[in-house]
Length: 325
Ligand code: GDP
Image (cartoon, rainbow, N blue to C red):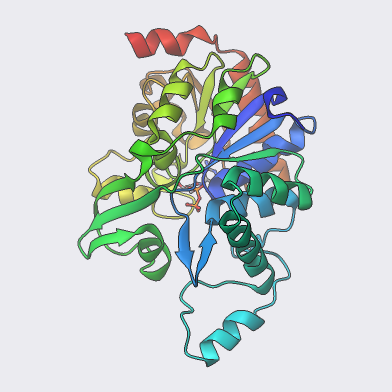
């Protein structure tokens, strides 16, 4: 599969993003979708490089994700972590046996000199995922949070402390010097690309690190294909995770209007939920109002179709004009 032939680029964090990425994969012909994935929450654990968002997207698009936990694999066994607990090891980050194999193999290949992009592509193929999966960069970017409990690495905040500490600021260490994924740059400049869909992911913790890589942000700004953002906030609430808690703590109004503002200069159209219909005229960009809560596979497909049709109605030049204005 050649990356330059993908027609749709989805941008995704973990669980929320992967839901819509799956919908897009299911309604598009095989090979038409590429997914740009956050690596800001990657971290070293037990000597291994763990890439939670890449793994969630890979497992989801491969149909092997655990839909109950939202992370890890279906039908997982836990021999490793149970034995580790017995020996007094670190068990706050749960690793299933099959999941563990991915981290071991990825870490081995990276140590042997392969890039994260190359390893991800090979894993995708072995998991029989028909879409291209692209880490945002081969360089390390690490999301850190200034909190009332001090500066915390992402997983320390997210998993160990269950997002409890109050957050004052979010940083993306290394993003300013990270080289953007060359494959993403090529795709964003390629003629067949018809649209970019920013999936409903956490704007600060999942999409923020991607936009924090200057070369990626510039390439998205310059991209001629329309960019559609699907709001992760429905009726003032997040479906899951700390998006709304973070918005409050960062002093941001909890509304789709703030989502549009967050992506100013990048967004050509916003998809917002029917419960937020009254806010559509206030978001400052063309808006599509549809049900956006994805509970079933059909919900994912319907939202994917709606986002794609909406994107087709948007002129590519609109964003460039707005960005310059
Ligand atoms: P994480 O790994 O769970 O942080 O995953 P993401 O960053 O990709 O997604 C988290 C965001 O997705 C949260 O703001 C949720 O509100 C949003 N989200 C999850 N499921 C849905 C859904 O079905 N519809 C919409 N609109 N947003 C969702």
